[in-house]
Image 1 (cartoon, rainbow, N blue to C red):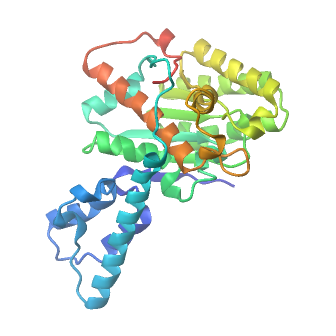
Image 2: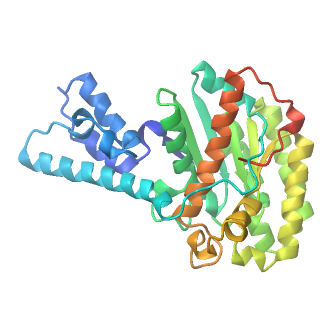
Length: 327
């Protein structure tokens, strides 16, 4: 049984933020309350935070101690998030970047200052298996990046990832967990478990195409497919994985949606950037670690930000070139 887990960008470090807000006196000024609420989202750069952003009034020494510990937790998580790329930089694939085309629905919403809802739909690598904390799964990392880029925007990223699933199970919850949410963008990660379960890649592609048609008919949300990861467990089924990657790319082209070629991006990390596999995949040989999720989210977020820039410049990219290679 699954449930949606929304991540409001104004409180992306949910647990520490809650601790701070509970300890804020009712009499605290509105400006102080806003600063306290902003602390988690802005804590990626603790050194730049003002005293009003890192101090919350307390009514007793015990509360002050609890508040200080909560603030320390916020700072520590933020520091860990920032340190991920200090170990291994997140670079685009060698050979230069290629334009992704536009994501007109979500980009126009951001340009107009309207609320934006993004649904991250998928299996365990969307849920965040392998990450050291929920803060480091890719939907949360993407949310934090977009919040930094658009600090006044009302953006919600919903994590609709359920471990072990692939297209057959996802189609059963597509209506409730995606379409009924009325998203502006759907990031659909699919295909890995089908490869591991020896499912026919053609059947998976057909179900994904049907799902895309349903999403498009319901309101025209921007859609980006995410294909399987490059990892030892997937590479053991090289032929099936290759077919899956190729067919998902063809579906994206036919349905005029985006595709983030995760398999090729991760292969570039290893083969062209000489990054050891264990630097982005955990010991199970399948799931990404904090760095893998962070770099994946960073590159995907860069694509969204680039699309917003295109809309602002009045660049309208035809739908038939929206199947893209990122970066």
